[in-house]
Image (cartoon, rainbow, N blue to C red; front, side, top):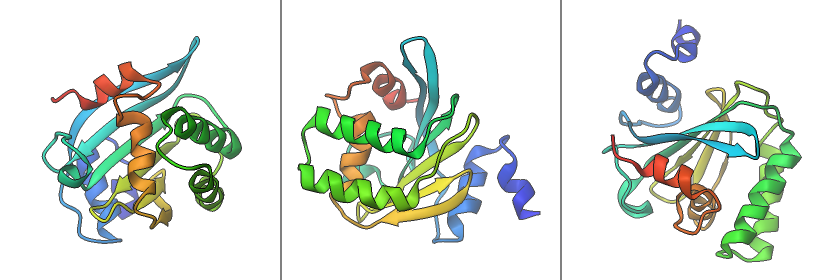
Length: 172
Protein backbone atom coordinates (compact mmCIF):
# COMPACT_ATOMS: atom_id res chain seq x y z
CA UNK A 1 0.00 0.00 0.00
CA UNK A 2 2.82 2.44 0.93
CA UNK A 3 4.60 1.77 -2.37
CA UNK A 4 1.39 2.52 -4.26
CA UNK A 5 1.05 5.83 -2.42
CA UNK A 6 4.67 6.74 -3.10
CA UNK A 7 4.39 6.05 -6.79
CA UNK A 8 1.26 8.16 -7.09
CA UNK A 9 2.08 11.56 -8.52
CA UNK A 10 -1.35 13.12 -7.95
CA UNK A 11 -0.49 14.37 -4.48
CA UNK A 12 3.18 15.32 -4.62
CA UNK A 13 3.44 16.90 -1.19
CA UNK A 14 1.85 13.84 0.45
CA UNK A 15 4.40 11.57 -1.20
CA UNK A 16 7.23 13.76 0.14
CA UNK A 17 5.80 13.51 3.65
CA UNK A 18 5.52 9.71 3.36
CA UNK A 19 8.98 9.26 1.88
CA UNK A 20 10.79 11.53 4.28
CA UNK A 21 8.86 10.52 7.40
CA UNK A 22 10.76 7.24 7.44
CA UNK A 23 14.00 9.15 8.04
CA UNK A 24 12.55 11.85 10.31
CA UNK A 25 9.44 13.90 10.88
CA UNK A 26 8.96 16.15 7.86
CA UNK A 27 6.36 18.86 7.65
CA UNK A 28 4.32 19.18 4.49
CA UNK A 29 6.28 21.17 1.94
CA UNK A 30 4.81 23.72 -0.42
CA UNK A 31 6.00 24.46 -3.93
CA UNK A 32 8.11 27.58 -4.32
CA UNK A 33 8.43 27.32 -8.09
CA UNK A 34 9.13 25.06 -11.03
CA UNK A 35 10.77 25.24 -14.40
CA UNK A 36 12.73 23.34 -17.00
CA UNK A 37 16.39 23.26 -17.94
CA UNK A 38 17.33 23.14 -21.59
CA UNK A 39 20.75 22.62 -23.13
CA UNK A 40 20.86 23.64 -26.77
CA UNK A 41 17.82 21.89 -28.28
CA UNK A 42 17.29 19.32 -25.52
CA UNK A 43 15.07 19.57 -22.49
CA UNK A 44 17.28 17.89 -19.86
CA UNK A 45 15.08 18.05 -16.76
CA UNK A 46 12.08 19.58 -15.07
CA UNK A 47 12.87 21.12 -11.67
CA UNK A 48 10.68 21.88 -8.65
CA UNK A 49 11.63 23.66 -5.43
CA UNK A 50 9.72 23.18 -2.15
CA UNK A 51 9.94 24.72 1.33
CA UNK A 52 7.74 24.80 4.43
CA UNK A 53 6.33 28.24 3.66
CA UNK A 54 6.36 27.97 -0.14
CA UNK A 55 9.03 30.64 -0.45
CA UNK A 56 12.80 30.94 -0.44
CA UNK A 57 14.61 33.65 1.53
CA UNK A 58 17.97 32.09 2.31
CA UNK A 59 19.27 28.73 3.41
CA UNK A 60 18.96 29.41 7.15
CA UNK A 61 15.35 30.67 6.94
CA UNK A 62 14.05 28.33 4.26
CA UNK A 63 15.11 24.85 5.40
CA UNK A 64 14.07 22.19 5.01
CA UNK A 65 14.36 22.86 1.30
CA UNK A 66 13.68 20.24 -1.35
CA UNK A 67 14.84 20.33 -4.96
CA UNK A 68 13.38 17.67 -7.26
CA UNK A 69 14.70 17.07 -10.78
CA UNK A 70 12.74 14.89 -13.20
CA UNK A 71 14.99 13.88 -16.07
CA UNK A 72 13.82 14.07 -19.67
CA UNK A 73 16.95 12.37 -21.03
CA UNK A 74 19.27 9.65 -19.83
CA UNK A 75 22.68 10.65 -18.49
CA UNK A 76 25.41 8.70 -16.77
CA UNK A 77 26.40 9.22 -13.17
CA UNK A 78 29.79 10.49 -14.31
CA UNK A 79 28.25 13.05 -16.70
CA UNK A 80 26.07 14.28 -13.83
CA UNK A 81 29.03 14.57 -11.45
CA UNK A 82 31.18 16.29 -14.09
CA UNK A 83 28.40 18.81 -14.78
CA UNK A 84 28.06 19.47 -11.04
CA UNK A 85 31.80 20.13 -10.72
CA UNK A 86 31.64 22.45 -13.76
CA UNK A 87 28.90 24.44 -12.04
CA UNK A 88 30.87 24.69 -8.79
CA UNK A 89 33.85 25.96 -10.77
CA UNK A 90 31.60 28.46 -12.59
CA UNK A 91 30.37 29.84 -9.25
CA UNK A 92 33.82 29.80 -7.64
CA UNK A 93 32.50 29.56 -4.07
CA UNK A 94 34.25 26.32 -3.13
CA UNK A 95 37.81 25.10 -3.30
CA UNK A 96 39.06 22.48 -5.72
CA UNK A 97 39.76 20.18 -2.74
CA UNK A 98 36.15 20.52 -1.51
CA UNK A 99 34.81 19.85 -4.99
CA UNK A 100 36.95 16.72 -5.30
CA UNK A 101 35.87 15.40 -1.88
CA UNK A 102 32.21 16.01 -2.67
CA UNK A 103 32.54 14.38 -6.10
CA UNK A 104 33.99 11.27 -4.44
CA UNK A 105 31.04 11.12 -2.04
CA UNK A 106 28.58 11.60 -4.90
CA UNK A 107 30.14 8.60 -6.69
CA UNK A 108 28.72 6.44 -3.87
CA UNK A 109 25.33 8.19 -3.75
CA UNK A 110 24.29 8.92 -7.34
CA UNK A 111 23.57 6.50 -10.15
CA UNK A 112 22.88 6.69 -13.86
CA UNK A 113 19.70 8.62 -14.62
CA UNK A 114 17.14 7.47 -17.17
CA UNK A 115 14.33 9.41 -18.76
CA UNK A 116 11.57 9.85 -16.17
CA UNK A 117 13.82 9.31 -13.13
CA UNK A 118 13.42 11.74 -10.23
CA UNK A 119 16.40 12.87 -8.20
CA UNK A 120 15.54 14.80 -5.04
CA UNK A 121 17.89 16.65 -2.70
CA UNK A 122 16.66 17.60 0.76
CA UNK A 123 18.60 20.38 2.48
CA UNK A 124 18.28 20.07 6.26
CA UNK A 125 18.59 22.93 8.78
CA UNK A 126 22.13 21.71 9.64
CA UNK A 127 22.98 22.15 5.91
CA UNK A 128 23.42 18.41 5.34
CA UNK A 129 21.79 17.03 2.20
CA UNK A 130 19.90 13.78 1.84
CA UNK A 131 19.47 12.41 -1.70
CA UNK A 132 16.62 10.30 -3.07
CA UNK A 133 16.25 8.57 -6.43
CA UNK A 134 12.66 7.78 -7.41
CA UNK A 135 11.57 8.22 -3.78
CA UNK A 136 14.24 5.85 -2.41
CA UNK A 137 17.01 7.23 -0.17
CA UNK A 138 20.45 6.90 -1.77
CA UNK A 139 22.73 8.69 0.66
CA UNK A 140 23.57 11.76 2.66
CA UNK A 141 26.39 14.29 2.73
CA UNK A 142 26.95 15.75 6.18
CA UNK A 143 29.43 18.51 5.26
CA UNK A 144 27.65 21.80 6.07
CA UNK A 145 29.46 23.58 3.23
CA UNK A 146 28.13 21.08 0.67
CA UNK A 147 24.42 21.94 1.04
CA UNK A 148 24.65 25.62 0.07
CA UNK A 149 27.25 24.84 -2.62
CA UNK A 150 24.97 22.23 -4.19
CA UNK A 151 21.77 24.31 -4.04
CA UNK A 152 23.66 27.39 -5.31
CA UNK A 153 23.93 25.64 -8.68
CA UNK A 154 20.26 26.51 -9.14
CA UNK A 155 19.59 29.30 -6.63
CA UNK A 156 22.62 31.62 -6.58
CA UNK A 157 22.25 34.90 -8.53
CA UNK A 158 25.36 33.94 -10.56
CA UNK A 159 23.96 30.56 -11.67
CA UNK A 160 24.59 29.58 -15.27
CA UNK A 161 20.80 29.02 -15.59
CA UNK A 162 19.23 32.37 -14.60
CA UNK A 163 15.92 31.62 -16.35
CA UNK A 164 15.48 28.40 -14.35
CA UNK A 165 16.45 30.26 -11.15
CA UNK A 166 13.69 32.82 -11.77
CA UNK A 167 11.19 30.03 -12.36
CA UNK A 168 12.21 28.14 -9.21
CA UNK A 169 12.04 31.23 -7.02
CA UNK A 170 8.72 32.47 -8.43
CA UNK A 171 6.19 32.41 -5.62
CA UNK A 172 2.99 30.59 -6.45
